[in-house]
Image (tube, rainbow, N blue to C red; front, side):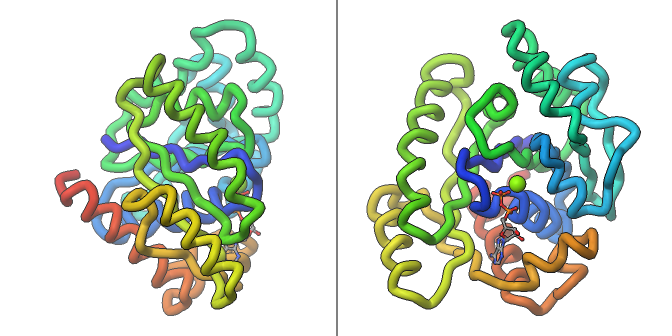
Amino acid sequence: MRIISISNHKGGTGKTTTTLNLGKALALQGKKVLVIDLDPQANLSQSLGIENPEHSIYQTLVEKQPLPLVSISERFDLVPSELNLTTAEIDLQGGIVGISRLKNALRKVSYDFVLIDCPPSLGILTLSALLASTHILIPVEAHFLSTKGLVTIMERVEELQEGMNPHLELLGLVMTKTENTKLSQDTTEVIADVFKQKLFKTTIRKNVSLAEAPAKGTDIFSYAPKSYGAIDYAHLAEEILAYYGKTV
Ligand code: ADP
Ligand code: MG
């Protein structure tokens, strides 16, 4: 089971959009996929039309309940979030056991891929995701300002690799909201220079359909199957499956 944290402590870089549409793309390509909404904003849950769920990740993190699985479509399940998760962040500060609860709960489910939509911080929720994960995928907005924080997140990954999660591997970085502008291309070049083969060849182009689909409570493949967004996320899924050698 590949467990991938989709993480970047900066907001608006495309974490939720990537979790949803990469997850769905992998499901359409025959994989069994679980997406977990770990963000107290619950954007991923809302994007899939799930508001005020009866059970959420909160009960898993705070009350040690099993993961509440909601079936969205074929081979595609969601663990929803709720606004209470803000309290969980506080409740979990208490002890070291708290941050292992997601990891422990994941031992009891079986999927080809689990994608975790992390909140835009490096707090305890993100830490519990990274502790549970085999890989981290970082969406990077094609804008110079957004590249600065990458150093911080890479330091955090190295700390985890040396300590609590030696198995954590950088799956890669993916450029999001790319445009045909010099700024967008320059940013991509800078990242490519630093991260070399860890930068995915697929870039996610800026595409209004990707921003519209959540309001319809669905993914890009259902909303606009011929859009750039659908094409790009399908390519990203193919690139990731190729990386794993199609052995999953
Ligand atoms: P994060 O979860 O990192 O905060 P989101 O995935 O919510 O980021 O994206 C932030 C905003 O940008 C959302 O309104 C989303 O719909 C929009 N967005 C994300 N990716 C794209 C894209 N490739 N093209 C256009 N809009 C996008
Ligand atoms: Mg988000």
